[in-house]
Length: 352
Image 1 (spheres, one colour):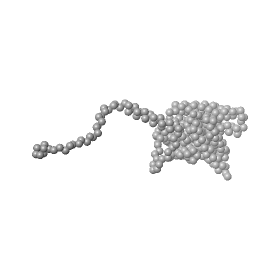
Image 2 (image 1 turned 90 degrees about the vertical axis):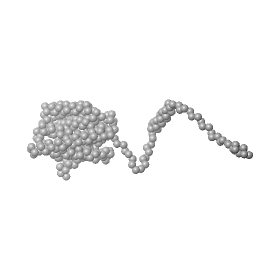
Image 3 (image 1 turned 135 degrees about the horizontal axis):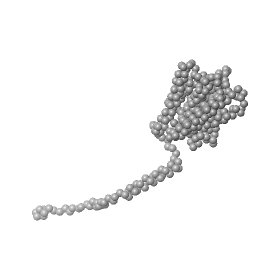
Image 4 (image 1 turned 90 degrees about the horizontal axis):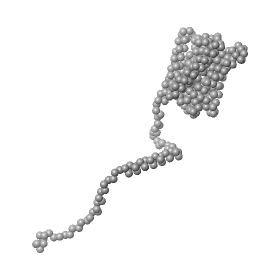
């Protein structure tokens, strides 16, 4: 088995692990709405954290076997894997619009990352580390503030929080790469402690914020946002600070921008689809062609029905009492049979 094949297999398993972790995070957010950031008492949440950690570890190992241009685009398959997995394991089927948005986001992200060309410089100096860390903190706080302001719009709030989590994860990846490069150059560990602290803070913040992003917005929109923003932020740092560029010169740059537009359109489609789903009233199922099975009536329901019946009876009694009295009709006497005696006519008497 070649190294490239190993990298592809590890990347696919990593995407599946990320998808499973996202599904569990969304279920925890639905079943534990009062703990939006860290539901520490839920075992399902810890399983989700373990799956996310496994996905990150496999992604790093895949980078050791294969090039970045192959491993990074395969990571975008997390969105595509998550939708059928959610339909199978938690009975959450995605609509056609969600599928179109997810595929658009995946294709756009994969195309954008495949055109990114790595540079020789892969590490940040001290001044750049401070600048990137401060800018990242400001961006994450700004997105969280906007999400708090949009609390009446769950989908918008979710996308903003997912964007903040994606920024945190992306910059954590940049610092991880910096530490790995410096470690290979045999630099002392004491010089890496600040970078390791930044990685821990950003990774922890990304996990907590991403958990909050799944509350009230479903699975596809926040997962797609995190999956797209994370590598895009890392690639932006690479293009601006590491000297990376797009392949094939100006043509490759134009194609990369087109892929970026496709990815952004997919995210917009997912967001608007979820907003439209919230705006539609819930449909009431109507039974057709056949008897409807009666549901058992609980004790509370029985008491409620009884109270309602008593209320209706009292209302009828009050209405009867309030009606004006009608004048009494004389009772008709029974029909009397009148007997007529047969008498003679006066003329008959005279003639007799």
